[in-house]
Length: 433
Ligand code: S3P
Image (cartoon, rainbow, N blue to C red; front, side, top):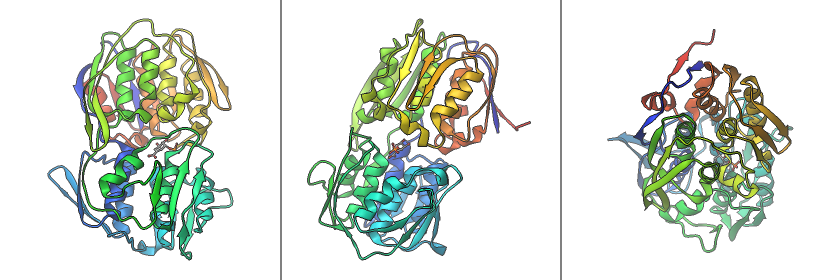
């Protein structure tokens, strides 16, 4: 599908609640499916990624019911059963694959985890290494990617794992395997990555004896859990509002976990008019409303490397945003972007250049100089966040921007086009000619 975005002829206006947080939804589904009893989940994201996790959980023995906008899950009491045919297809979702690989290795369930072309090209050595140290028998392809084959092993032992990368998927994989290991398991990382697993486990009855540590043999219990709106989806309308003259947009009850708000800090540092309100805590996660109004004269910044883990999924939209700011925005320490759903540094650089943006790509980052943005046709390379980032930039381009493979937006945000159009954008999906 090709998405055509017309230059905005007026500002974006309105208030809305973006869909549920993807990271938290994956965890809510997996934790409920492992728990003893029936959990009730509200606000759950139902996108292609989280539906892949939901289907996998059903194939592993959880029972899913829907009623009155909620999802109820009767868990397996801690013991998944082997999936039909020994195969789980996790589509595009790295979180589903890495978290479930931890659980299934811990339980020694023989199966193969596979996904689409993008997922099957992402690095899995980063979880195979710690799981093998714990005693799991898990094998990746010769290239170190999925499909992953898990064989039953003689039981896992807890470890202290020093992760070379700040990655919540690695951390969560090891901690979840640790629930089924002997002794305790602890993960140390170079910088704190998103900490939803640590915040959510106690809600599902598993206390952490020390930071980022679990005791083997801990059992999950059913819970009622409310998923906040996804800040990683909210950022597209917020960035659009900051750069489109005449805009005033509020997103409501969005997750404001400090490990996820790096992009909001950058927007502020670049001079955007951004404020938060109605803050509260919802099931161990801070939430609040975020309002952004257009401001003239946004300025480039040097993005502090320490903020990169807190905005790892927002760097594509920051790259689009930087194309409209005065001066050169410098992003470094972001080599992880090369192993996401696509090589996001390369895909964004190529598309931005097509739209007339001046930039210089580096192995771990990019310099982007703001200036006029032209229209044109860009490839999203099947990456949902690149597709949404280009479409936001289309609002301030001098002619329409067309984005290829925009159907992948449904990976995380199926209602994106409709939400943007309600705010006043003109985005039209069409067939690829
Ligand atoms: C996620 C962690 C991040 C992020 C991904 C979701 C999670 O990946 O990019 O979209 O839910 O744990 P890494 O852990 O690989 O950085």
